[in-house]
Length: 211
Ligand SMILES: Cc1cc2nc3c(=O)[nH]c(=O)nc-3n(C[C@H](O)[C@H](O)[C@H](O)COP(=O)(O)OP(=O)(O)OC[C@H]3O[C@@H](n4cnc5c(N)ncnc54)[C@H](O)[C@@H]3O)c2cc1C
Image (cartoon, rainbow, N blue to C red; front, side):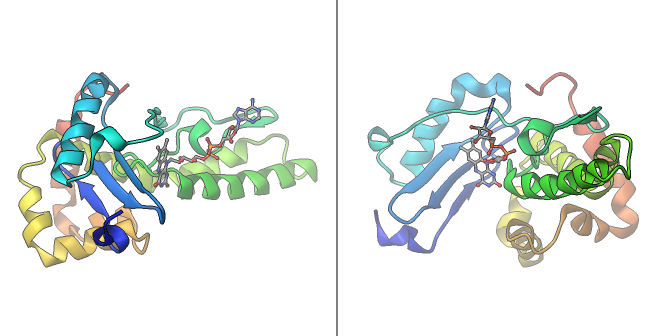
């Protein structure tokens, strides 16, 4: 593995509808991948080969190649009923823009533990307070992430120069990636322009394209 990847990650944005390509150094190996909307699945091998070529990685040497669906929760859908609740991926708590799910898996598991504890102590009749907690504590950020994804992927071209040339935009993006800020904080910076963002995001959402 070349020294170049010791301290470098690659995020390849703007070339895949609904997703991105990545190269993550993992110590002894590189994790190389592409993600996109389900309908685009048949193109992913070609996109992976292109990504490898772009970063001069030998496509033929890739090992352990596999695909996986990332489940996205429809806001308001049931994730707790009677004595059953769903956490993490099972509840569809993936971050739509980044595809990350570990953070939400931990957070939802912590909320689930609290709800189960109060149920077992007889302080609540069922686990429905878990769903309310997820809706209040996790979903607002995921909903904004979805809006950003809609706005970005409908028309990536106008945003790419911002990412490339605007330090402010780039720093905000890095804070997000490092988990030092959240999506709501990001769009809150839009101030009075927020309704315009909401409008662009909802106009960008094309019905039925999600898998
Ligand atoms: C290739 C790839 C890369 C990813 N990269 C990232 C990343 O960089 N950052 C990030 O945040 N997220 C990433 N994700 C998403 C992340 O892995 C998931 O969101 C996260 O693991 C969800 O955690 P979970 O506990 O809900 O589910 P899982 O991690 O899937 O855990 C569920 C567990 O339940 C077990 N299980 C299933 N059925 C049964 C059964 N009937 N009985 C007993 N056990 C069962 C499974 O074997 C599994 O161990 C990635 C996902 C993929 C596929």
